[in-house]
Amino acid sequence: MVIPLFVLLLLMILTVPARASGLIDCEKTGTLTAAHLNQRLQTVFGPLAPAPASHAACLYALRYHSHDAKGRRVTLSGLLALPVGGAPRGLVVFTHGTTADRSLSPSRFTGKTNSPEVEAAVLAFVSSGYAAAMPDYLGLGVDKGVHPYPLGKVNCASAIDLLEPARTAAERLGSAVGPRLFITGYSEGGAVDGSKFRTDAGRFGHCRCTDGWAV
Image 1 (cartoon, rainbow, N blue to C red):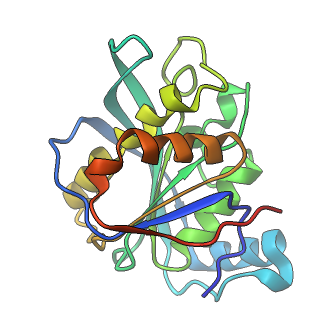
Image 2 (cartoon, rainbow, N blue to C red):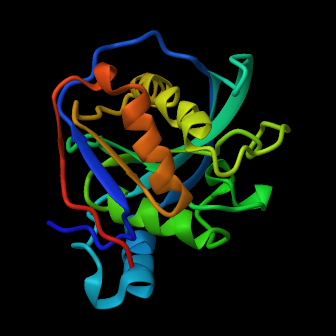
Image 3 (cartoon, rainbow, N blue to C red):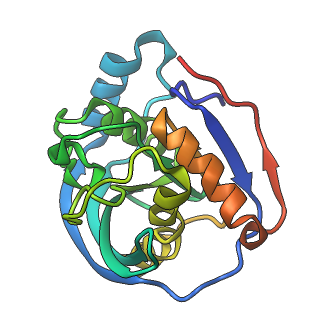
């Protein structure tokens, strides 16, 4: 099934070696009922909407350890969206486009339409049985530093370092997430994804790139 999302890059990772989790904490920030998901799917995507959701979804703000451009340890934040009942299809890491508004960081999304891009990604993925993790990036979310736009090689650390915290949080919450990993992004996030894979390609094991598209 094709997910109608503004995707610049999509990588399917088949095997990912385990690493120690850098999760600091996890706070529940919202719940989306199946009825709400389906109503918003129709509003946001219209005739291109994915199949209706049969489950609710929960939203969590994560804080986790990462590093900045100089290799210094920092605390970053991101969003984890989990379908109620588990995500057998795997984990999607979505890297967002450019924003200078801290309130639009993915971790600030609570189910209200304060961030159309984040909402569209959550709707498309969780309604289709995927867990979704979205980094805020350096300089956004809880990090008070300067956002290093448009340095994809620097920003990619925020996504790489979110992988294990997202899976650890899901496990602690009792949500089973399938082993497959998908990486996708929009605009600035597409550049972050390209840098992410080039920077840490050896970590991802065997992978396959699928066709990307943009709208």
